[in-house]
Length: 116
Length: 113
Image (cartoon, rainbow over all chains, first blue to last red; front, side, top):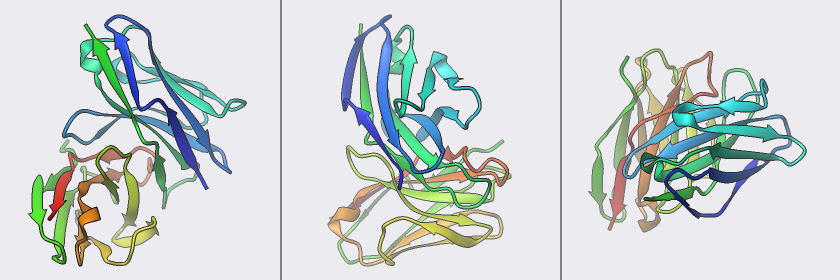
């Protein structure tokens, strides 16, 4: 079984401050890990993914995440928050497998508020 | 390249009715997954279709069913609607080569009264 836990359902940061959104995963097999962003009344957009290559993953819009196996974590960071970053962020996990069925399990989400 | 599209955008039904939601995959994608996202929750996996066959299912009852067509578009059907079925329904498509990278549509907001 696989699961993700996102610490903090709401996070507030000042514009220009560091963004840190926490995600811990549980998986019985080597995982694939993802961060998605969802703007109000929209679908999910992939920010970045870890698929067992480099442990530091760079994504779109200046976001990055580091896979730490010893801590079973995959926290999302951005050095300087922008007003446009205000959205809901979801961490997700799936099993590593090639092709075919791939169930993705999502966390409950973290709403990021950026204060001007 | 056309992205994932879903129709309708919004839908209101009453308890006990049946509903069909539609999804058009991104060009070249032959895998489609459906998710239910209740208010304030993360998306929950319903099922996945690959080359017109269901090849994975989450913890949803049989009244949730689907189809995938030869052009890889897809339908989600829900029978005997319950109030708890009110949610945003998302579909996501992926290519055969990169099944780990899913592209999501904007969703259909279903309200059951």
